[in-house]
Image (cartoon, rainbow, N blue to C red; front, side):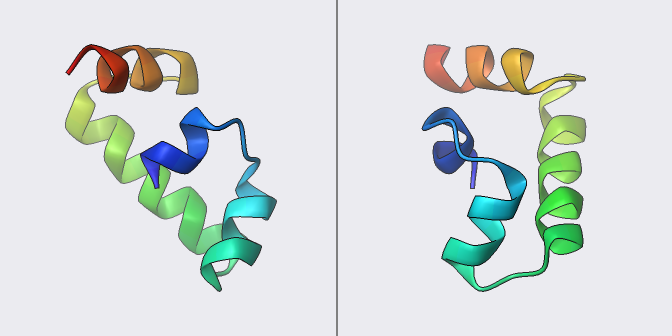
Length: 51
């Protein structure tokens, strides 16, 4: 899902593309943020691109 964020997709677009509800996408993204110890999309993508 992080790769879709990196492409600039909105939660709504990710949900539609993956066949999920928007709330499920938000929950997944929040979980990713917690695991990466970040608080924003920009911080998460910075860590994603540097790894």
